[in-house]
Image (cartoon, rainbow, N blue to C red; front, side):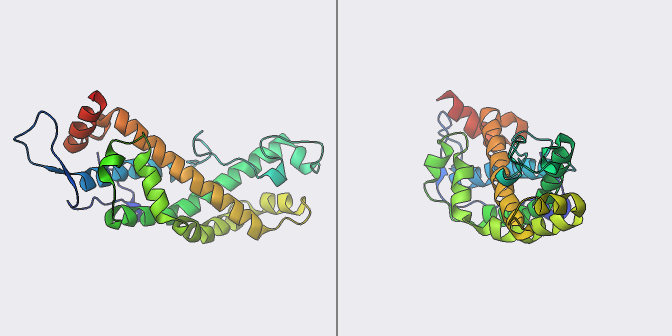
Length: 228
């Protein structure tokens, strides 16, 4: 399964690193564990970004949807909020705009994730292959550190200005001491968490049913692993 989305397309890496000989296949060629992990992460991130970069990709997905910051009342309005933020219609409109801004950040994140998958040095490959349903995602996130946050912030900040800036400005102005820069950082952190959550969910789904990739290597490895 190959998903194309212009410059954000993820690339498969070449074979390298530790190898695995599948049980019951003593005469078969040894398979690179590094290649297995790269393919798993590639399919997982391809699927996640293909979903997130659609219009409404964050807002329409329960895993990725970004909630309103606490200063805006979090998930529900309270009597402590200004009248404008107590309006459910306004709050829904505001939340949609924050999620649209997150899409701008994801556009910047996608190529960085692709490059990291292709180039990162993978240690403890066997433990990752045999690990928990999101082990590869957790490994990659740890290796990338704050790289996504740094890259996404300009895109998110731009999205906050471009998408219905009137509703954003009215919300910010209704909270004493709250500014656009602070909002941009908050949404960026939440968007990064959503990206990794989406990738992790895709990884878990592939591990559970590798046939969805139509990739013989992943079907062979995780089909065997799931039976152990």
